[in-house]
Length: 294
Length: 132
Image 1 (cartoon, rainbow over the protein chains, first blue to last red):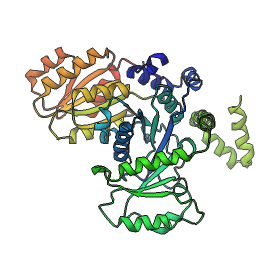
Image 2 (cartoon, rainbow over the protein chains, first blue to last red):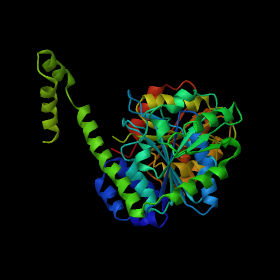
Image 3 (cartoon, rainbow over the protein chains, first blue to last red):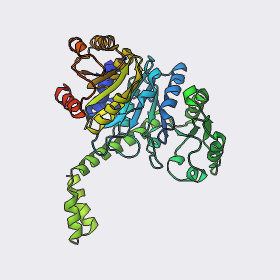
Image 4 (cartoon, rainbow over the protein chains, first blue to last red):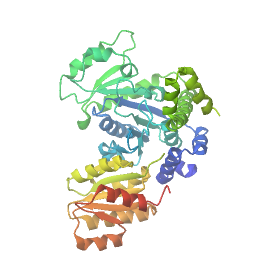
């Protein structure tokens, strides 16, 4: 099946991704030895700032520049039903028609941090299938959804005018992980003030570039594409080092996946009762921990 | 932990997507992963998205009267791409007299105005051929 995906069979690649999501570790393992080392571009930002539209335009630009582009669109799963509405693709109709693109929507399935448990495995599948640039769109992120930082080679943080002030901009968390800032919808408000707020972060000397865009009209997109390429070119790590840092997260997410599945099946009420009956927290937890490693 | 994946799309030129959006949201609440592909999709767009997303169900909403053409084209593209394990269902404004024709094309069910969410989700759960 992997061979067919490498030779361009979309259906085979899609099935590989499904197998990964079903927890088929054999597939995930076979991909690791075949990685080519594509660039991973993370696009993050608050809900509704235009991440999907930017990816749609940006990916078209990258295709024009000779890349094959894979896209993973992460959207949240319901904490109640477990289902999801995966609605990023709706902004990507034009991109979806290009021969050099492959778009896959991915639910978080309960994982925290803005990605899904198998995001790295899925990116690996795109990598092996020959997609040279992989965009990962995080869930509409809050201040703390920063995991994209650990798997992307460059992180683009999208914001818009009239959203928060400079106090929001200096806080820890998501504002710290951006390598490039985009002020999208630059036509709807005081975009230059937002740019100034972001530039005021320049305390450490490592000021990320700040770029204004109007993604729906394609304005600023070519400039953004060049900024991304420039950032990637400056990266001094070897391909092998880049792949390794990505695989570190793969291992972490697989552990997290098992831990979360384990927690789902726990009888917390029994633990609370133990706590109420006077047992210490460590004692209550250590019983659970020893069960996990059984 | 993989859920049944459903793509909801509107082929053709009508933009009346309220029903499609309500259905997308409701199926999410029933525990499905719903890929919402939106309005003005060509049959080619829809089938390619269905392949890449590896869906179990394709749900098309048509209110423009072009349902026979749209479904016929989607069904034939599915055949061309050897997609034989995906459920094709429809909704929108579809005359009673066209339902047998749609069934012949390969549309498993048509859910018009007044259909209940339970009816639709039970149908998908019982007919979905994959992940069983």
